[in-house]
Length: 321
Ligand code: FAD
Image 1: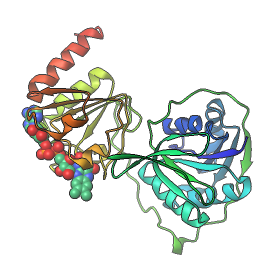
Image 2 (image 1 turned 90 degrees about the vertical axis):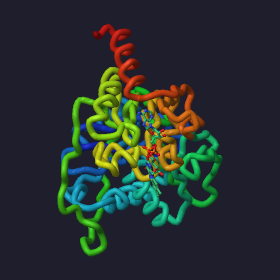
Image 3 (image 1 turned 90 degrees about the horizontal axis):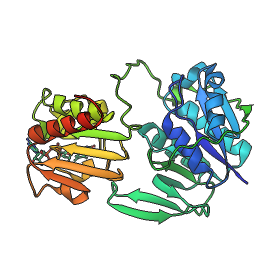
């Protein structure tokens, strides 16, 4: 079986769920081999969980520069790993950072790039979302080693324990003059809720929520379901909710089991970030709202009446109040 390189998404302490999804996807094409870029000591913490999810090898590039420069250490490490391994494909998560890395790597390798993949065939054929998710197309790279950015949520993570061999990637130091340097970091606002791109339930609010206070209704429903909170750009631009929670073309792409849209009209740029969700529920007082066109279930009504009823019902069925 050929090797398939998987770029590991992590926060230094924990491998992100999207990586386990990539490892499961990679098994369709060959033997998954992880590429881990981080500060010294990262591999010691993360290697076992990668092996438990099927990584037969872990190529490790550790350096203090890994978090000092934007993208470049990762692109350098992946490039070196490709040259070392000669893989059948390279898989990265289709996050904002992942897409940048994928594009830069494909340019450096002079090879084909497929973005927003949602399925992979053993033949190498890829199902891809195009034009913000309005079309599903089948594509294949015909030139060089395919670099494929896979949408988080497209594959089920699977435990598949194997012994993983660790290899050191001797990545050369970054040229500061040719790379963007990180000058400051601010921790994302985090709470007890799951991360937006990893949650199996997302409840999002739009302009219809009508203010920052209105988001309490959205949060309460998300909490009853154990889900994450998202927002439309109109809600974010109006200051109702922080930008890190924006879903859509210029926000995060999500693909949960359940997506609930409260007071969101369903503009194409919002749909681009959520229409691959497995089940979509919309609450909108306008029966003509385009969001109903992509919804599995729609409620025409006032979200301030419908959402609290839903929250109470969910809590009651889960044994709450
Ligand atoms: P609106 O379109 O104003 O819809 C509000 C809805 O709430 C209406 O349908 C209304 O009927 C309903 N409503 C009002 N009150 C209630 C109530 N009490 N109960 C129930 N329903 C109610 N948008 C994104 O979301 N994400 C993006 O990433 C994004 N990127 C963009 C990129 C570009 C280049 C551009 C040009 C636009 C982008 N947009 C994005 C903006 C997008 O075009 C829309 O403007 C935006 O999604 C609208 O947000 P909304 O649905 O919350 O607001």
